[in-house]
Length: 103
Image (cartoon, rainbow, N blue to C red; front, side, top):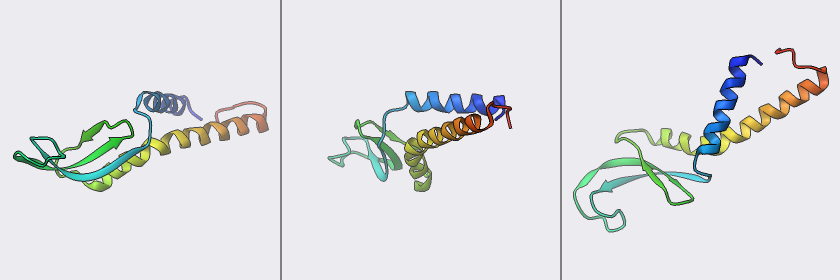
């Protein structure tokens, strides 16, 4: 593992630690000037949303593909799991070789 790989992994860990805890949910909807539950006021546009379990909601720019929002949703739980797998594989590699030669 190169030094830049190690820096990237550390940056990803910090991002995950600072992000709102999972689960996150993505969905499509219309944004109105009034409360969303009442559906009144002029329609501002169709948006894709990410909602966290804490009720925080982030609208994305009109026209963004739902698939992009879905990717963001799934990344919240996938990245920490992938980081754990990488750390486990690195630890196994070090234990099996006796040292980390950066291979």
